[in-house]
Amino acid sequence: MQTRAFTLSLLSALLTLTLALEPRLASAQGKAKKAKPTKRAAKKGAARKKTAPRGSVETRLQALSSKLDDLARGVADVPVALKGVQDLMNRVTALSKQLAASKTRQRSYKALRDKTDNFEERIGELELRVAALSLRIARSDAGDGGGNAGFDQGFYIRSSNRKFLLHLGTLLQLGYQGLVYGDSRRYANTDLGQDDSSFVLRRARLRLRGHVYNPRLSYAVELDFGSADPGGPLLVLGGNLRIFRALQLRAGRMKVPFGRGFLVHSSLTQFVERSGVVDAFAHRWDLGVMVHGELLRRRMLSYQLGIFNGANAGDDRDNNTDFLYAARVVFSPLGPVPLDEGDRERGDFRFSLGGSFTFNLAPTDIAARTGLTDPAAVAAARDRDNDGNIDNVGIYSLAIELAARWRGLALQGELYYRVEDPGAVEQGNRTFIGAYGQLSYFFGRANLEIAGRFGGYEDPGYGADRTALRPGEVRELSFVIAGLTLGRLVKWQAEYTHKWLSDIAAPAATTLTTAADLKVHQVRLQLQLAF
Image (cartoon, rainbow, N blue to C red):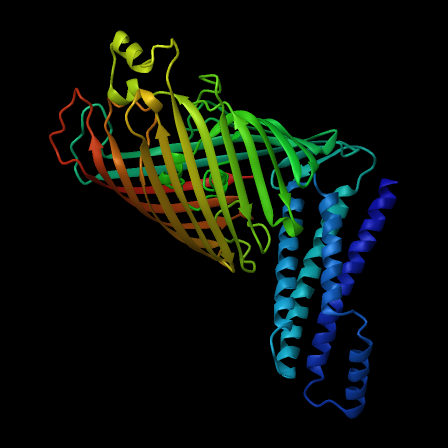
């Protein structure tokens, strides 16, 4: 049965490939005869145009869309193939909208004919891609009744009945970091002002993912033994149940859905590290449950709703009886924008606009914020209403995000706003704001990209030990050049960042004898292996 299914899939793919190549061969023959066409040839050409065996542009687009829907359902357990199908679906959607828009404009016959020829050529390219993908999927289905294993953007093992899948991947980031401060004197109890030159094992991750019994029931585990992300080796551990495309349930340790920047996987960032704005406001990883899905035609609207412990980084335990509530909604009218940075696919124009909101009741950090160390003073400060419980601070966070892609050009930006409300136990709310913008271009043939980023933020520093100096405001300007090689498995990056650190706060026990502003020059080089 499997051999028969493979044969049918292979024949279907070859038929699609033949149909896709037909208009190109006909076009090449037509160009060869275009120099001096005879009357008889002209009549035959007119007859061929009247018969139109391939169908209209709209018909071919509809056929492509239908075939891609079928492929998407069949490769839910093959991450790379599914990503390829989704990218082709986005391109078909964009092409359909362009075709509809072109028909509403007044054009001459020649201009309309040229436009139609252009559409047919682009549709032909899409048909070739679909045919190649169909062949790839058909080959992956081949077997003699046993399970199979291989390498597809990572090593995988799959059972013969396709009910079980284990996909193994890794992320290695080894780099160099150099810091030069404008003021080379070192401040007390801090690394501020201290020049640095060192090699860094930024990330060393092991990733396992797959499905159990059914592709709708998937799992993911991610461990990190590097130095960039605090919280111990376990980053992600959980499962996802796909009931419908519009309704999925995820449980375990995961990223809190807030903003866009932190949700992008570390292997897909253009810069060596995310903007400091993202690090200052993101909620990072936490234990919880989340409902998510994609709505409307072509997944134009996506949502994520979650409840989490609200614990600090590195601690999965809930530190009070209250939870963190998170919501994120993204609207992509031209089709979803991939959750990455840059435009390596160099596709048609797409953009997304989204918003996120979180609410968390966190234990007060007044002891750390004021530098209190005496046990009696700490106890009194943490329970000012004398009810026997640690006082809570209501933390409201809002993020607005924008992402756009167009033929190698990519734009990304986010705005964050945070309010900390201590209630009646303290006077006044504390507010913080941050924003960044990022612009890049990807040179397809060279597999090279350049990017620039500017951002600034007021550092909340909630729960941080204030016996060490911290800047109250940070601005940063960064530039990076990066290249991809070996099928994009290997990436190198060279980055320069200039930072302005302002309003550096001194703890009560330390006297700040130098200027309260610092300038920092930072150079980072990194080599990455990811699959």
